[in-house]
Length: 202
Image (cartoon, rainbow, N blue to C red):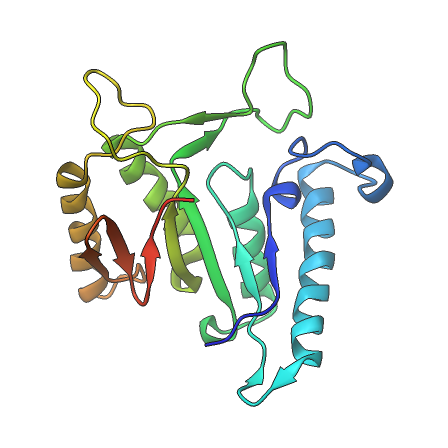
């Protein structure tokens, strides 16, 4: 599997991620307007990949999402399904650990965050189900978003205890073996792997 062209969906999945010259390129920051713009960019990604071949055939497009990238997972899932793109024709990654809380606002009050970090087990259970809903069989890689693995007392934000979270990954492995579309999980040293790639930190 060779991937040479990838597209990060952070700035396409939510209206206030990067503001520099966005008004030049984004005529509308409504949900529908952002979806249309994302579709145009994804069209270009797939076209570029089709036009660039090597000994292994066409390059496989890589789309990278996150739960904190607004509606990026929904945009990508809707695009792939509406264009009848098969899972083997695209590589899709996403991340859990941050929650988008800006409610589609471009600007918030001073000190108000657009996203909140939470690596608790409860948030993993919530976000992994949300990701499955949007991406289903397209998901190849699910990553821990800016995770730290040291254990802190009374701190559920930004910490992951491997011995506590691994059973949750194993539960989803059982779902996979029972017919779920979520990837198989295995653990190697300090990382938790999915299929041939990983639940990793980014």
